Amino acid sequence: MIRTAIRKLLDQWPQKLGALVVASLLWLFVSTDDTTIAQITLSVPLAVEGLGSNQLTTGIPDQVDVTLTGPSNRVDTLRPESIDAVLNLRDVSGSFEQSIRVFPPQGLTLQGVRPSVVIGTIETKVSSAVPVAVAPFGTPPGDARRVVTPLVEQVTATGRRQQVERVSQAIGVVRGTSGSATAYLYAADETGQMVSNVSLSPSEVEVTFSEQPILHTKRVPVVIELPDVSPLRVAEQNLSQDTLRVAGSREQLDALDTITATVEFATSTLIPGRYTPTIRPQLPDDVIALESLRVTLRLAEGQ
Image 1: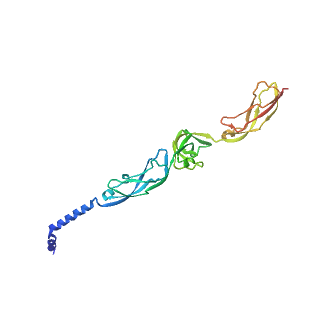
Image 2: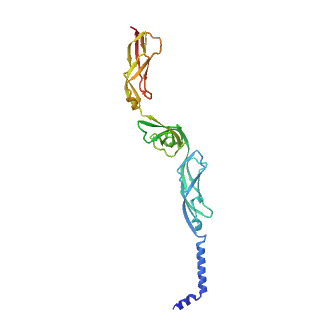
Image 3: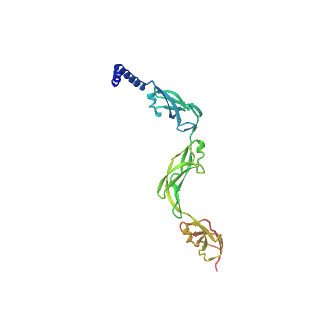
């Protein structure tokens, strides 16, 4: 039985071998045939041409979907960067409705592009100078406040007129305690909210740090120190107020119980009468007066 099977297998073996070779060649031809057509859709970056450096656009997509057909061996290796999709806005202004042109690689056929038409507007950029405000990040130590001083007071905001007109300042937040640092800015409206699609130039500024004591206030009694008015005498004196409101650090104000105010006359030759001389409160360093003192003196003949 086995011999019979072998005999049948070898029977007409040249014809059978030839048929096998033909089938193999046919399969190889079909698998490498350039005439097999395939289709592909790719998202392709959209290039915009013809815009001036001072122009902005709205309504333009970043990418378009391009559908191509062609030999499968080429379609299978196709990449988005091999396809050019172009929107030409040369000599176009204001509102526009413009078709997208696609340039497929050689040997491939364009079947469609979506969207095929772009509807948008072209505007001219506007610029405006805005002030810089930089705030420190973190809590200052002790009874002090951290002051951040930007080395640039203004920057230029550029964009669509509608957006730029909303910008009231360029805001930055920076971390640091001393020396200098770089603050990165964003365009903000009067409430501090970011205004999008507005560029700042420069977009970062150098800042310096300093610490200032937090000022407290206190009312302190005033003592008048009168000058020698011989041969006259001070017959009457009226001080505008008995206490003076001053500001300083908590430690300085806690140690301040009274303030001495000296009186200075503008003339060295005095005669009887009423005078309103200059009065100067003697204050410790870094303590400031928040009010003014006035004194009226009546000078009379001495006794």
